[in-house]
Image 1 (cartoon, rainbow, N blue to C red):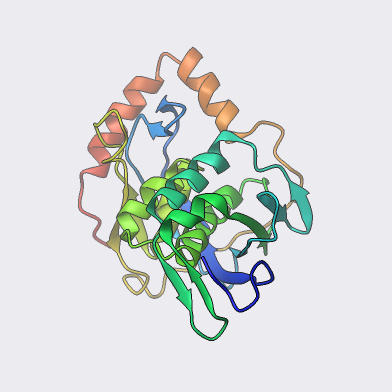
Image 2: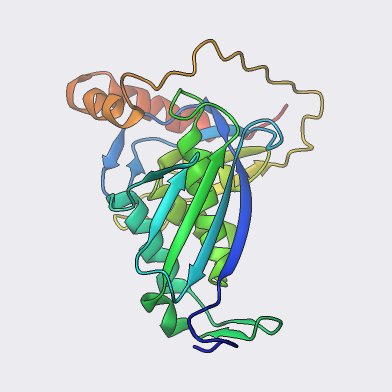
Length: 250
């Protein structure tokens, strides 16, 4: 690792990611840690000009720890989901060089460097508009850009899924399917694009925000309660899997 003035440099990357709205919803996890769903799901990705997260990630040898700010307020990065995404991206980091700044980072150095992350949502957070989907996929995508990660969108969606399940679908535009997968390690639980954003040009989605208050019950808690208490959930999952096998034709 080298720079024009050792320890004084900062390298940054910025990304923007949209939210998505499920048309066939996933509800319930078969693995809480890896966020593996009990059914396939399909969503439509919204216009990032209207609902999106914008994230800037900075790295510097002068940063003593990883830190994050959401909508201007510092939040903890100690949660398992953030840490899973950070760990998976750092494992895949490659050499990075910025000739203009005289910065060279070897892939083995990324484990010693800390990042500062600032993210902003242009719509209400935790109010039922899938802010975690936009935020976590932007978190993963921008970290990956900064660290020169070479994985394709499908593989990145698998990492984003470990932060927020529906985040994996926001990596693509248009209509997207999140495949529940069968492998215990979640390697085949990824997002695939069914149709791009130009597929249905006259489709208009109107969202009326009647309250920007945070939800009283989080999706995570609601899903866990459903899995533990609903005798109908497994039947719903079976029917949803069959529904998702149909080819999208509009």
